[in-house]
Structure formats: structure tokens, C-alpha cells
Length: 301
Image 1 (cartoon, one colour):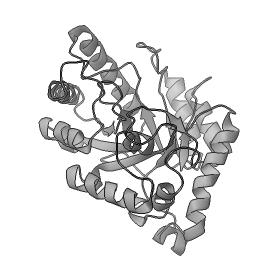
Image 2 (image 1 turned 90 degrees about the vertical axis):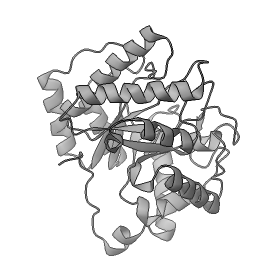
Image 3 (image 1 turned 120 degrees about the horizontal axis):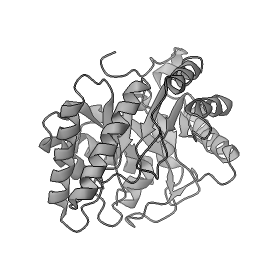
């Protein structure tokens, strides 16, 4: 369990905040999310971050890429800029020793979904070719489908996987707010289970490597990406209870991206809500046996 936390003042500060919140998982940006260029990571940056992470109870840290990147753009200058920035993000994740880079697949900007999916897949092929030997993996995040955004149906993610030359280097991050806004009815535990069956059939449950735990400020099928606090939006508590008590999801990092007004106190409240849902029914074999689940490692380690 964990949260997306700020890297203001240095990457290691996000680890310190995670420890203060009692997190065992963490998500960060490795640079400003709204700038194309970033100051290169110094040896000092990397050492201090890795040391802080190793000394903390955080078992897995993931990185989210910049919101500016659009690998599906039909505008070649923007797409080329996006590919270069995405390649840099991958290299930063590897240098920090982290397992996953979570990304939004992008938008087709009027060119059509099939054309957009093809451009995203071709971009994956290009960055994969450039990064032979890297252990980190890309996680495609499910989206709400706002505007011409791609990845809001499981079939679209399946299509990207089918189009790339090395699908084994890709995984998926499922966002609860996004799938709900995209039209998947997860308001009950039964609805969540049905949605996961659809995911398994289309994508494969083995590709699910992270879950973003967010309620939705907008109704089901709105295709609007607006996060809400856990249990305070249109989704409610039941699917989160199902997630927290599903043994097959026990080893998958669950990260909140809930609104930040009120600072860390709101993060603390959201994490407590989720932990209480697990405490109410138990969280599967690991909790019952008292054994610590194995840490999430980079692929190949």
C-alpha cells in the first residue's frame, strides 16, 4: 500500500514522506511532470535515493511518466519529442534501480483509434530497440477515455500488445477511477470480479503489475478523469474491499492518487480507509499466516 508523493527538494524526500505515512509502496515522478526537459540525475541524486529506499519499509517504488508525452500523436514533431522524452524516462527509472514506468498511452487527436494504437505500438518498438539490456518494464495504464485518449477499453490494450514485437516487456497498471469512468461497472464486489474476468480474458491477469486506487468524482461512463477520496465518490467502498481482500492481488502494489488538498493528512485518511477494509475481513494467506509477502523486484533480478 502506498501513495504518489512529491519529489520536491529531492527524490529521497518522497521516501521520507512514504515512511512517515507508513507506506510499503510508493509512486513518484522522476522529474517535473509538466516539463519536457529535466536536469540529469547526478550520482549524488541516485545514491541518496537508493540509500533512503533501501533503509525504508517501502518494498516497491514505481515511476509515472510526464503528462506531456503522447506516443499516439499524428503530429510527427510532437510524437518524436514524446519518444525522446519517454526514452529518457526509461533510462532514469533504470538508473534509480526501479522496476516499472507507468504511462498513459496517449491520444490519437482525431486520426482514429486504430491509427493511434499503431503509433503507440511502433513507439514501444523503437524505445525497446534502444534499451536492450534494461531490466525495467513499461506499464500501460488504463485510461478514462477523455477526448481522444487511447487505452480506455481492455481490447485496446490487447491490440497494443498484439502489435508490438516484444509484448513480454510490457505490463499493465489498472486505475479504478479510470476503468469506472470508461464504463466498467465496479461499484459492487461482483462488478469488480466481472471486470477482472474481462481483463483476464482480454489482457491476461499475469500482466497486472500495479493498481491505482482512486474513487471517481464523475459518474460511470462519463469518460472524465477526476479522482475522488476513497469511498467519497461514485464508486463507493465495495470494490476497494474486494481488492484489499483478494489473495491473488496481495503482492501487487496498490497506490492512491487521491486529491492532495489537506496535504499528507488526506493521504493518511485514504490509506487508513483501505487498510481498515482489509482488516475487516483479512487480506488473504499472507496476513493469516503472518508471513511477509516477497518484495517486488525488477524483472531479471
